[in-house]
Length: 155
Image: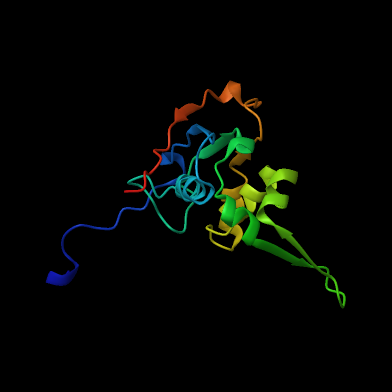
């Protein structure tokens, strides 16, 4: 070995060494984007010391009370989500307010997906996200740890 290769080696966790945990997050009063970034970090495992970009080291996340998210009124009216059927004239537009009132779970999944890697690993990570618009969820058997996301106060 030369002098350059001596020293610390890069650690790669083995599959059996990766410990998956379950977290429960209450979305009441939280900002949509700030909550989504924290959830994306946990799903990818970036909050762990054993983070590896080519392995799924992330944890499971349950998000409840999505219907009580805090969304800025100006943004709710002005932000528009577009989709297209592929046919001429097939563009459809919905404001954030319309989208959120119809399906808050779908909106939150779309926002988190925008922050995930767009590959097989990203799709695998997204399967660990469980979202509910009310306080009820069906994952009590996993004994999730309640996680509080601190809300930033404008200074």
